[in-house]
Length: 103
Length: 175
Image 1 (tube, each protein chain N blue to C red):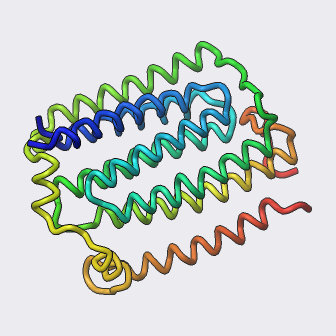
Image 2: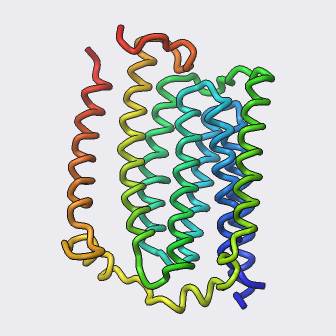
């Protein structure tokens, strides 16, 4: 039995679908951010798997994933700062209760 | 032919990844959802290690499982009481989410299974055919300016992280 490329792409597809489901259904902003991280993570996994199987001599997929991880860290930090700020202004982190961002 | 240990490791990690990613988006306690997300991120880093990208797996653990998860847990504890459950989903919203995600999943899986080039190489061949990526290669790729070298994006990311620190402090400070 060989571990071909398809074996690694199937869990990544399922992870992405779970992220989409969470992004559509959840209302808490932190839960939305968690779904977003799932989708980003599955995209990163795809980059790495394609790099390993199709272009094993180069490392561009890995470099892209490193940059994606750094940018995801920055994005999460800013998003959480905004969520804490909204919590201070509105009193909860529900997306339906945020009618205006300026108060 | 891959070794049995590799195949067993793959199955453990893949099952962990799928189960915990589904649980992370369906759990009604947000702190548990964050914990399941942590498990998914750690499984991903195990796959990076298995594919031979040791540096990337270490970065994944340090940045994602270390840094981002601490941010998540702090944000959750700042904005909710522990033990709070989120409200149950309305049925039309859940139906919409399930239909969108299942449709996308089926479409992508069909595309994957009809793709001809995906089934040729096994993991061992893929790892052995290329040169192993050493730390020296990574350092050269990140600090050079010629083709396939990434000094400018590297510096741009450092400026971005600085801007992000300042922005986070400015946005979240008390007025």
